[in-house]
Length: 436
Image 1 (cartoon, rainbow, N blue to C red):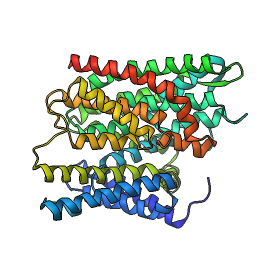
Image 2: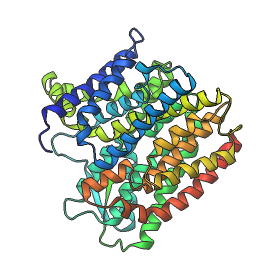
Image 3: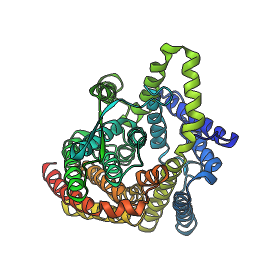
């Protein structure tokens, strides 16, 4: 990794400050929402020139539209706008993403990578998918690089390997409580019941792994394609993290949301893991992570913050125009959920990140009763399929930047997968709607 500039290091310090302020705010003794969001936005300003052009353009358009709609609502319709607070939306989710990134400090000394067994063929593809999927439930995008870099040591990654990485990570959005998608959904519909969503999402995710294996075996010669399988002990960390989150959620801090628990728990565990080597060593690793890794999160941080501002502008304008009397659907049942899923996936294929479709939809719906849980599943399923097939999704942009593959090439190879996964998701939506 190239040496970061002073500007990038300052931005990294601001992102770390935002995380610390967010954790301090969980005490309830002091309100930190405004300083957290201001620190994150200032970091985005400092890192703006470093954001990939496509992501910068998308974030810029969202910011301009959000501010424009707030101005129209305020000066065209007399709506009340909290100008100092307009930058606070999605800051909660961003700090969770920052907190999750610190888990990379566990067991990654220097350039060591997780040990695993090399295998080839369809079994190798399935094991690559499983490794990325279950590591990715905790490590998010960094799991792709951990596995992908190991596979690329001998030769550049092949198309089947890239597709296994892409689908393994994106399908984790269906059920992982540690994923950014879950953070966004919980922030939008805090009343949703995670248990029902996981019961529907986990089997669908496992189906994605089987579909990937059979699809790639049918379309490619996998004889010489190397796969990656995790050693059993490497799965202990994701399982222990999930158990810890559940422990805090149900017994130790039941008043705190899962997003909040993850935000403070994962950095704390990472710090505790490094403390046996001495406080100086632990602080040095935190400092290195903050100065180098956090600034590289500029694309996702800017997109999430921009989407939050856009959502606020849209919902404020819609409320002002309709006097709070209009929603997209009078009732959010199976037909409405299915059509919403299709629209979000199609918009992702056109280049919009699923967070935009999900946030927009949430701002123009009235969700009561069991509707928040159904909406949550729709959002997560659309996120899982949309990020796999969308050429400008975070996973595809990351694979493009790291391994030189075109996002549109990945999209072309994922069209059949997206169609089949969409059909299964629509069935799952119908079942869940009848179940709730």
